[in-house]
Length: 100
Image (cartoon, rainbow, N blue to C red; front, side):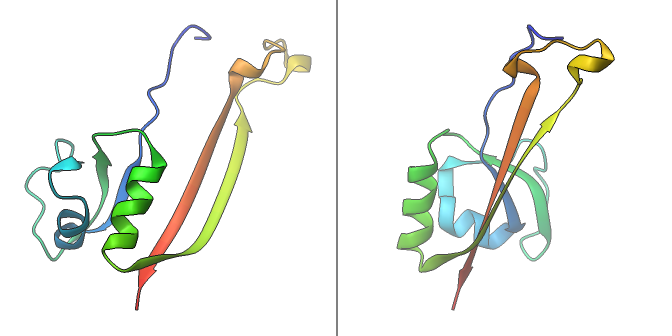
């Protein structure tokens, strides 16, 4: 549906204990609430939508950006009868951080 509006979210992937250490109360754990601290999760997201805030928190915790990847995908091609505007494009950007 072209009128559906996706909510931009910053998802957090990593060990639960480390995510809590870095992001504290700004980490929304509602999608994976009972995850043990030593286990990995890709289901958390942040309660804010500004990358700068996430980058600041990671930097303060001693992390540095190691990689970045971005992609765009199209749901329908105009020649297949789909709409011809940019609203059908979605993008996904992944940032990878590490700590020495």
